[in-house]
Image (cartoon, helix red, strand yellow):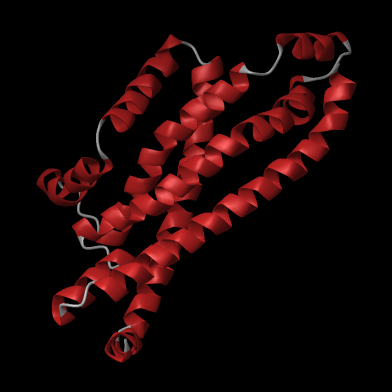
Length: 226
């Protein structure tokens, strides 16, 4: 036990840096995934065939192929067509583009779940399209999308461990390097699992709080729309 603690102390700075980079890549990739996914979901909901067909092809490609294969293609295949990106950039973009395909379906389903009667009632009262989106569609969409979105954010968080394969020096990469140098496996990977577990629990807690708060804000709007 003392030897394990000594190793954790020695490699502590590397592990902390890896943890920081893991969180940074996850937040950046998730922000990209949510923003792009919202735009794609909106196109799938209201766009014409000229827009929906390429978006649908994008969604099916990124949902139908493993993230690891996408990362390999971007990192090792990119230079062959003149696109050279560093590992961290590939990690952020790969995570974001991969997650956007799933967020697109979450938001598309959210748009489709808004009762048409509410929109017709809003139009009959003379509400502009902007006000219909602000007061009727978006509040309900947020509540409907939060549970699935939180689950997907947790999945993306755990998927950051895959980035070590393309030499991103995040937490899993640092822990793996530590084990190869010291031949000690239990303590490093136990610490790795504990850190990921703590992060996922934090995200789940914040998601539940957001769901409750958004639900409280939504109720008066639902009554007004009805």
